[in-house]
Length: 217
Image (cartoon, rainbow, N blue to C red; front, side, top):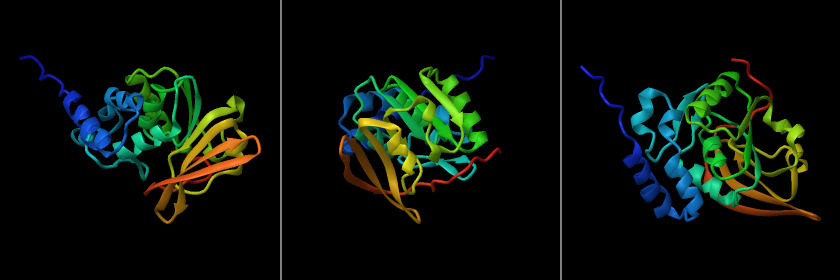
């Protein structure tokens, strides 16, 4: 007897794009196309695959989560990527945001402080065939000096900016992060200028906390 066919997630993924993203103001067609292409169900536990395209965050282990699709798309849209950028991501998690970014820029450099998640993200990205990504297990608050300056830095945990990050962004580049504490954050985009920094404030949101150091578990 033949094995049952694997479930197709194309329709739920397209509904996610149409109902959760486009209908709520995500209008960058490149971002919408990336969200329609990246197989989110490959980045969550098999037991949660049926919920992969729901409008919610999901646990990925170690007290961390994969952000809801809207937040991933919203943050990606705010980066205003044109295709040739080098982007540093602080907080790889399961690798889903990394995968979306990799379809929209030249190369993604991503740092994860939790060893087990770093290894999981590496496997997820390999399975989903995203090659223009470099991963590192380390303290994201230190950035990645070896490959600086970056065109953009995106932070996927809530807290306050490290002093190092802006020094690793080129003039004209941006730093985007959920700023705040106690589970109450707001997306903040800072653009580095030749003579200062331009700040813009966006959506209220909730993220796991930004932590120092490395966890080898």
